[in-house]
Length: 148
Image 1 (cartoon, helix red, strand yellow):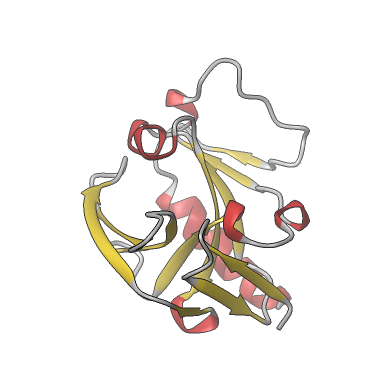
Image 2 (tube, rainbow, N blue to C red; image 1 turned 60 degrees about the horizontal axis):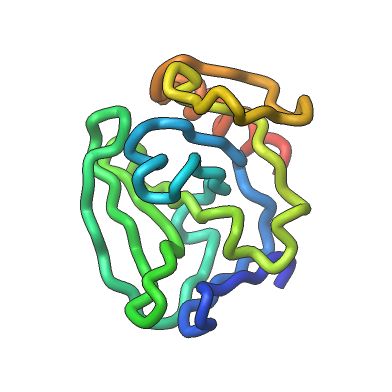
């Protein structure tokens, strides 16, 4: 496997041979409440990444107003991935659960209208979107499919 990761306690593990379709940073108020600052995630088709271990699901409304289905380790409660009612078949995996998270950097930033003033990037982010950026995410995903 090319990429491996796990929750804090190690009960839930993930692995994939593929690079993410897209790495994005979300600054919405919903992600801020869930993470304490913002969220950086790797987007995959759900069948491209394998998870093992028991999870529990928490459903909430994301910044876009759509449902997010967050899967957490039942032991340590680390969020290991999300699925969405508005991007069927896609999963977002928090960058922090990967063994070598430094291999990934966000290319798209969404909800810049809610971004904390002190958050800066090193120039890796190529697109900044004030709102949920659903259209921009879909376009970026389609472009990335050609590169894989």
